[in-house]
Image (cartoon, rainbow, N blue to C red; front, top):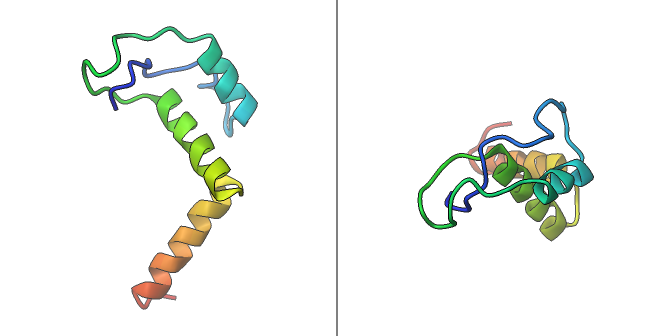
Length: 79
């Protein structure tokens, strides 16, 4: 993505970082580059994406993923 966020964040050593931990990390993070300049992978960016998906679905991210996998398996004929 082109957000300008750095690859790593302060929650990196956590196995399953909480929303508060990811957002706290964001509050302490400085951009590595101007947004839109180049595409660079960011763990923090993906953590934020997980929060957005979870809030939009109004359920924990692991439930959203499990439900999506179940739908894909059902539609592909796998069980």
